Length: 134
Image 1 (tube, helix red, strand yellow):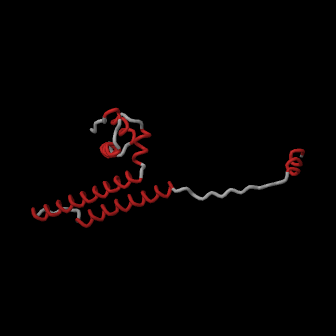
Image 2 (cartoon, helix red, strand yellow):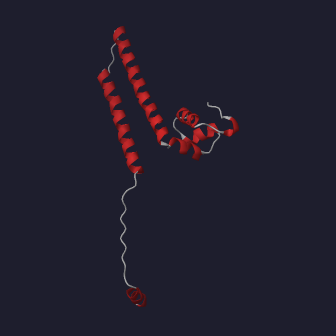
Image 3 (cartoon, one colour):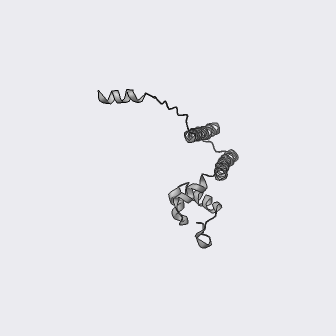
């Protein structure tokens, strides 16, 4: 668990670390650091923070790939076979990654404002008074 810095100030780096340590949960991060949720949200939504978080995800996938390769090598050296083909495992990892990227694209598109067209109908004041009288 990260420590709160003097005067109850927490660095942005500490907030990002705590955010990752708390399974990317804003509420738990704020509670762990003793700071408002809004402060955590402000930090993790900064472009620099998003870059760091994305790099962390990439690192996770690299580690998963390393573990898979190490496991395959171990199984080959030990002469142990498995019912799952390593290609199937890699395909499943790839499928997970592609689904995650699709969700990220959808999320970024949902944050982009859509074009809104408003039409104003101007009718003269006499027409409005006539409509009220009827």
